[in-house]
Image (cartoon, rainbow, N blue to C red):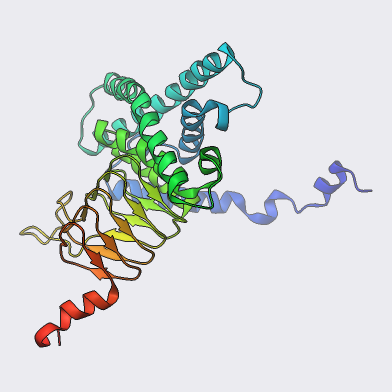
Length: 316
């Protein structure tokens, strides 16, 4: 049996890879890139994806310690565990928010100390965690009540990608509105890679929200979603067009995604585009392509859309 030392000795030596030459070339490319952007290495330090993955895990455990934390927690030990986990997680979050603020300040040529602002954002974010937990309770209940396959809210929490996505979104959204949009966007993309559900942290989503199955769901930055809304897989709440300014540059942040009112159901594969309103209590059928507002209580199917578009020769 080959020992670990013998195995290491059998591997090719470092010189065979010409690592020093590759490192030198990469260093030159990196320095050339910095020079072309008139930047220094200190001005390119950004939040860490790896650190944010651990922060998401810590925040999730803080919100649901009995189900996502340690199985041996009891009594007062739960609060101690939550306090300890939250303290460590918020310290790490502060570091990542500070990196974002320093990065943004460097882009604008500012040199002010950002620690006070990073501390304020982190403190305000922590204060919002109870409200986040309350919203997530309504989401869990909506998922359990809306899916006959769900046996308990506990199962929903630990198994459903839609719940993971909305949990991460509610955390990211608060960071987004508090002034850490880059950290928020990174959390959203981490969640996207895990769940297959793409929710921009700027989207406004009220309580009792349920994404069933979820793969391929896309919710844009300026979307507004009311109470008790249910989406199925591959639903898109997207933009129809991207307005530009006089210089031909895309206008950032303009309202361009749908408003979905309370008690709406959108079935699999539906695409809803533009700043339109889906009226309260409406049902949007599978694979519908919708670019116009519909009144409350509407029942939109593919056949209905075709009937509207081609009525009287319109659309031909």
